[in-house]
Length: 139
Image 1: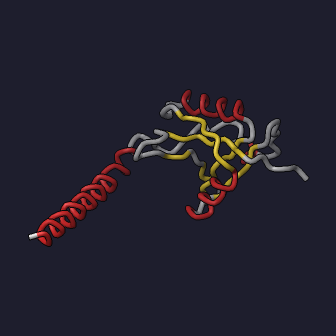
Image 2 (image 1 turned 90 degrees about the horizontal axis):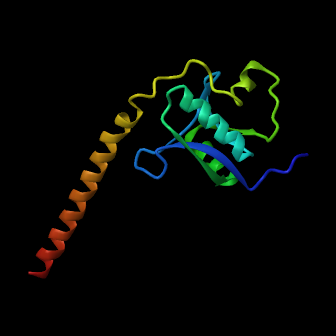
């Protein structure tokens, strides 16, 4: 039995921003997030994505348990890509190289931005209302 590393590498787009996204694949109706054991494998995959006109991806090392919990809560499947992985099927080959045809990613940032801005505006309005009430209470 292979021991699992404490940390795995995932590909993030716009890492650390409000529109951060994680790279995933759609396989047989499931959203799959690849967990690379080897950072070099993740960097190579990120380079292949960029060659297909994806935005640059950041390779992030994340505790395995954290990303597996995230995937479970989001309804995604976490798939480990061990160092030296050799695919046995066409589906497994996608774990080493992205598909030639991809979903359109040109609008993913814009799709996320309006709800986040609306949520921020609503939170700001709530904060202002609470501050106003506290000032009125002082009078």
